[in-house]
Image (cartoon, rainbow, N blue to C red):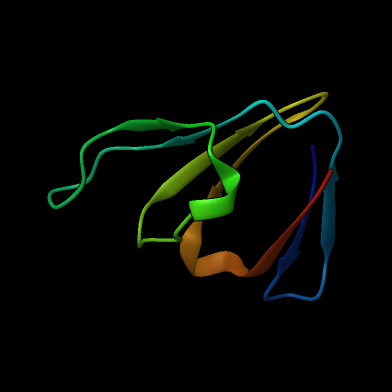
Length: 69
């Protein structure tokens, strides 16, 4: 799976071989490891995207995410 993340500052981040998205804990959300990208929902928290590269991003900085097989 490949993910392309567009940030609100206009930068694009490409992640090849995406294996896991880790949703970090907040006062309202439990930590979750996400592997079903078809049902992925972006909540107001931090996420670690793990593939050939690893990126830690806050959802407030993300404009959108697209997934491609």
